[in-house]
Amino acid sequence: MKKAVQTLPKITLKQLSVFVSVYQTGSTSRASEALHLSQSAVSSALTELESRLQMPLFERVGRRLNQHPNAHPIYVQAQAILGQALTLEHYHKYQAGQIHIGASTTIGNYVLPPLLAKLYKALPDANVDMYIANTQEVVSEVEQLNIDIALVEGMPRPTDMKAIEQRAWRTDTLMVFAKRDSQWLSGFAAYNGADSCYELNIEQLARLPLLVREAGSGTRQIIDEQLLKHLPHAEVVRAIQQSEAIKHMVSADIGLGCLSQHVIETELAAGKLIQVKVAGIDLSRTWWLVWHKARHQSPIWQTFIDILIAE
Image (cartoon, rainbow, N blue to C red; front, side, top):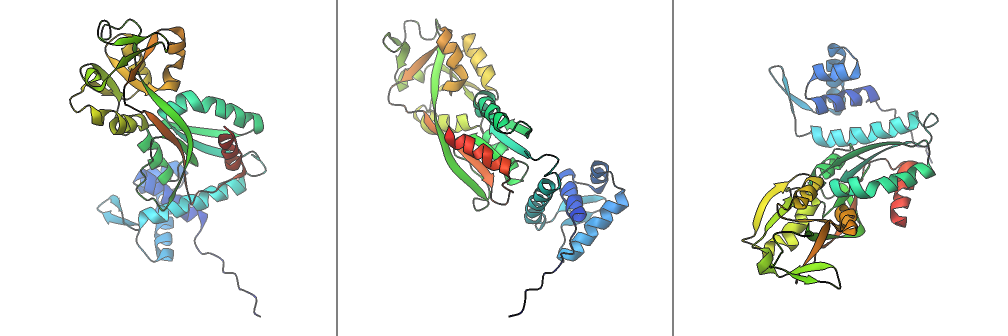
């Protein structure tokens, strides 16, 4: 039996690095600055890569470079290859490794810190980079292979389901809440002393101002699907990008809010805010782990996964 002959690849890591930088920055001049190479060296490496692949990656329009449809799938593979090469290159220097973690806003601000503490305890020399934004922004970064693993609220909606792995992680509950002595509830809502909360029905809630997160956030997704669909004429004051802003506006009695229990648990315990239960509404939701199937799953990646699963 003949022994299989291994073929040395003609594509170089330099060519892939140049292509990724041009893809991200949109020009050879900005890529040359980022990589500390001459612009002619960048242009030459890009041309060589296109020649090796026998396909165009960019369309030249004057001095502009427009991404060719071929560019994105090559970009995904190039990111994966470069990520593995960097892990190998720094293996001895940074044996604990590096990990890029993404998180949607609520998880990133209120749930991720103690998880990172556990990761640092297991791997004291770990190099952790974090990206916190709303769910769809984080999922987009996963698709671009800029993030190793993400923790998001609501159902992830990647553009390429075949490339993205998603796993149910934890259950969270959203709460409608108000300032304890809110003008909106006085003489209007029934107070339940046993559960220390106010109680409303759908019709009553629809008549009150409600502050919600912006479209694209995991919190807003659940509010749309499980609350606002029952309130077609609800008086929603405005959509707000930050949970902390909603909490402070509710504390100022501008209206009622709806956020994760994790966001308001301190204020609930201190008696500054109070839960408002809405009859017939279930605001529980699933939190998800999301990663790209092409992303290299390093030892630190697996350690972090083990910490998450143990929660």
